[in-house]
Length: 431
Ligand code: FAD
Image (cartoon, rainbow, N blue to C red; front, side, top):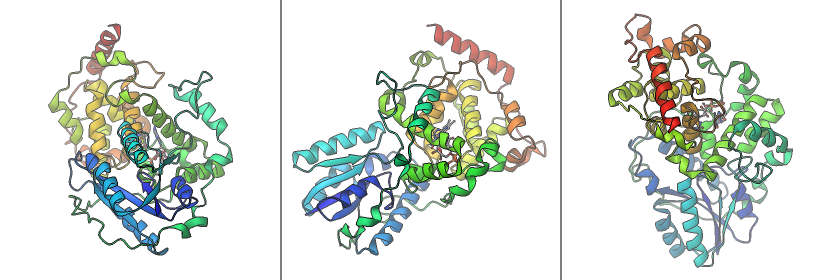
């Protein structure tokens, strides 16, 4: 008789809420991870770096667990298939996992919860991935906030030390199930090959002091790059918040709150996966020119900052936040290409891709999301470059041909584009 702790985006042992509760329960605990073919089959690249990252992280977990004579069980299939097989093999008394807020994930979890409950197996779930979830920070009438500033005021006020305290998993670690599992699938058996990308390190602590002053300048590389680690739970959000509090890094702390905010929004408004948060924006007559889109993807728009950003993304799986805003604004406003195209491209390329933050970021840049700013804010990519890359360091690195004056001509003229988008957006919003 065992309980199972099902890991998803919490690929760590330390400070893991579900694991802590499982270990404190009545049965020895077996860890489980499912490579979900519903998700894997949608990935276009067989060398997707995120799969390599998950795979390597599971290998590390495996060796950590072996110190306690335990193992992680790794399944490959749909979650339904995986659970069928598990219940055929083990006598499972309880299942533990952490909340996952994406629409697909909540559907999956509801289905599995129903299935397990029908077999009299309780499905116990916990908050782990965020500081405050779903309904913990909301308006006086209980409705969700839809604008960040008032949300953050309450979020920050509520953040007492209790909320960033680590779960002392190590105290109960001897309650792991003693077991050796030998037939976990290899990367090849999952249908993937090893990516060549290197992954960001976890030493974010050293970046926090200088963050506020330098974060907006891409050449200074002054941000932490921990998005990937927060996405897959290889760094605990509580540890991140605790460091921010200890170092008085308020600006950085507020970025962690943006992450909570977007997850809360996606939970309450799951339709924003496909539709604009502000419905009138779905009347926009996009131009959706495929040649322009291709230039944007490849970093050949003729706007150096846009091109530098897209090349950074294509080469490293990362793009600086300021530049993400500029390229997203450029795609939707200068080229009048649907934000969903850009969102999908980022989803394919970003190591730190997160559905909630990506949709939030794209809708913010387009003006159709959770943003108080009016649609007529159109970033000028040249002014943005002057302001945030004044010595062209970032641009010269990614667009070296600019120095030899061999860079392509702009594919659209700024003044023309600005006038066009204002007209098109105005018409859409007047309907
Ligand atoms: P830091 O600046 O060091 O911040 C630390 C952490 O705070 C980040 O890792 C992230 O988890 C969180 N964070 C910071 N800024 C934001 C923000 N604006 N919104 C939500 N969370 C934030 N972030 C993602 O994690 N995944 C995405 O898919 C994603 N897509 C984006 C798309 C667009 C169009 C835009 C404008 C922004 C997007 N962001 C996304 C937000 C932001 O750009 C990244 O989180 C950030 O650049 C990651 O770099 P970092 O880890 O060095 O961040």
